[in-house]
Image (cartoon, rainbow, N blue to C red; front, side, top):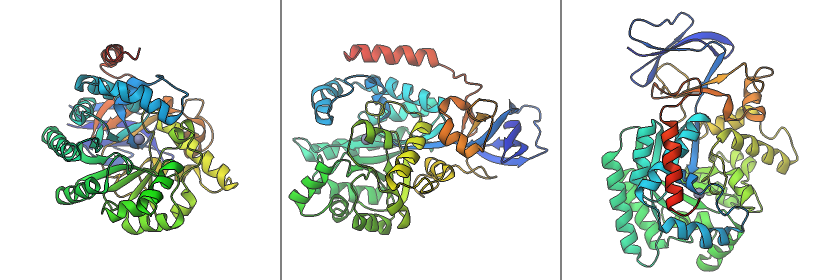
Length: 414
Ligand SMILES: [Zn+2]
């Protein structure tokens, strides 16, 4: 008994796809369902790999449209941080469920998260059916030793409750909120637990100047000296990385995750130097960042924005193709992001997109997906062989919307 998608378009041919035990078992023109199989009719649909949102703060959907259009520090200090102090695990759970709802609707099959109450994030991802790397946040605050102990305890709780679909990791927030001692501690703990690390790096010019003033080196070098730059590390943003830092990141095999829409909205004044990173073989992914600063979790929108920003900055429309932007969105440029490839034996994580939608009816599929489409062209989303959305319908949508609204109301945001 498995899942069979019939008469679906793959690379110009019409095929059947059989999934068993969470993996793709067969792709062939004559794959047909047998008794007991779950069947999805793929007529008029193309099967494509799912997207990976490689940096987000899912529960911040609760802050969507709250205190917009303000400078970064005013937004954080006067609005977001005071509201976050009131957050309960229940709020994070429903905020994350709301994020998962949006990600499933718009073609994301896996996300990398960094937020408070990580065990609630993990539970929400499990219940929603998505893959997630749920990182436990660390900010030194007034008592760094206590913050480290809290982070490790939270990691243990996530690990204890997580399945293979959801895994735990560390998330020291940034080099300006976590001191060298805690950074070294994360490096050692992550090494011994073989855990991943997510950290914001080089988002603003001010961060670079402050790092140079305090430590005498640029942010990537500072991170490397703490032992944090390695193949299991994601650095989010990387807007102000210089060429020597890109060389170092390539050598250490860390992944840079660019968040083009969030960078534009918070007006960081620059963009991730993608062509220079690509030239050096830096591994790259794309994220939305949180819904407080994007405000959408529709990664198709970020793919388009990323490609257009890079073309414009290079004054060269050929600097990146639609296919390359899609590959980055599918995690194909990073070993850490574990891209779901559509091959027999691969993970059964894929999308069925509407070939009869106006955006995809004409022209090549890659160009349609990146330059014309939004996530609304996704008809069905499958993760680990389980259909999370079918024909645009998700189970439990009304309850998630109602509960998230209740949480936002109790936080005083609505
Ligand atoms: Zn972030």
